[in-house]
Length: 131
Ligand code: HEM
Image 1 (spheres, rainbow, N blue to C red):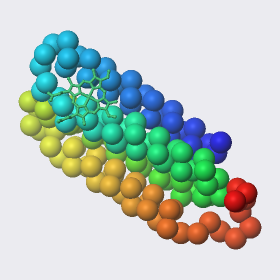
Image 2 (image 1 turned 60 degrees about the horizontal axis):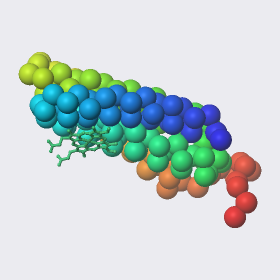
Image 3 (image 1 turned 90 degrees about the vertical axis):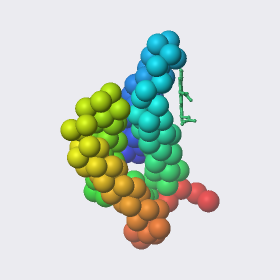
């Protein structure tokens, strides 16, 4: 499996542990005040990261070069910043709003890189899996 796939799965499983932890805390405390953070950590942090990791594993030619690394770091930093600041915002720290915006924009930039990678054919001569 390409290194960038490992990176996406490792980051993803850490997000899932945190996301499920928040879900359990909400359930046990019966205080559902951080649903937004819980849902985004699980869906952007775990589900989407695992989809990106799976895509690169199925298309190893696309995992070569710098762009997949930029994709990983931009996207993961964005989701991490957004998750923490959104959690704090939902807990009443209104000053977190600009940080939520920064995290969201980084996350969106990561998704645009993913779209570019998906739509651009792999460079000629790069390893392609058997069809
Ligand atoms: C042990 C695991 C989990 C627990 C204990 C848990 C717990 C919760 C709780 C208590 C809520 C609030 C429900 C409400 O007030 O309406 C919630 C909402 C939500 N959870 Fe989880 N959750 C878990 C795993 C997950 C996972 C893995 C995902 C996604 C991959 C997820 C996605 C969502 C979403 C999208 C919502 C919002 C639903 C809505 O607004 O209608 N959860 N969860």
